[in-house]
Image (cartoon, rainbow, N blue to C red; front, side, top):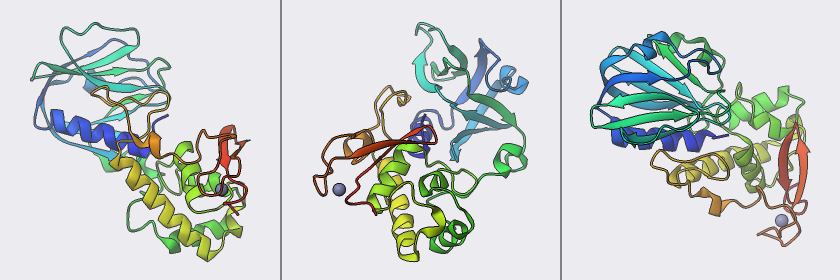
Length: 269
Ligand SMILES: [Zn+2]
């Protein structure tokens, strides 16, 4: 599932190609995604794209009339193609653009979203979201304060969207390795010193992953069909039984809340 750096990359790619272009109309082949595709999107006619941005893991396309909110769910992908491109199975939504391009959405499991909003900031889906990891509000005091209140494992804590948005499994593993903290420790036992390392690691890993356009392991592909390049910087994720790059111990894998969790017993305390 794409995480924050991958969504940021998609937004950057779309912005480059579609900003100030006009959506002429849409073709919706399947309305039934996680929620029904909004009728405003089905009926869209000649509207200029004014802005493209990310909120948590949502892609927001601002057009003259309002906002198109896209979420890729479990298996969704967006790509740019031309009118002659063959339509494949699971190509559910096309936005036809005035430069002879199409923004096409494919989603085998149909767990994504294509929703309309007139007023973004009143939308329920955004109300319960935590803060952005690269914002100033996400700082040591915030992390230390909230970790005291919770008796859950630190990895689950940093993956909780109500606390901080967009950190999924890959980056949670990388962050905890970088901060030298074992993933199964309880959040309330993480010291102030460790919280400081954790904050710095989250910002460092997320920024670097954005810089390298995210990580392609399974289903993340950029809209120009290129891959994300952060994979070569992964130090712990997917490295079971390989040597730790810092100390040569063998990397371990456990399953934590149904997700693969990798760590080095020697470097992480
Ligand atoms: Zn190690």
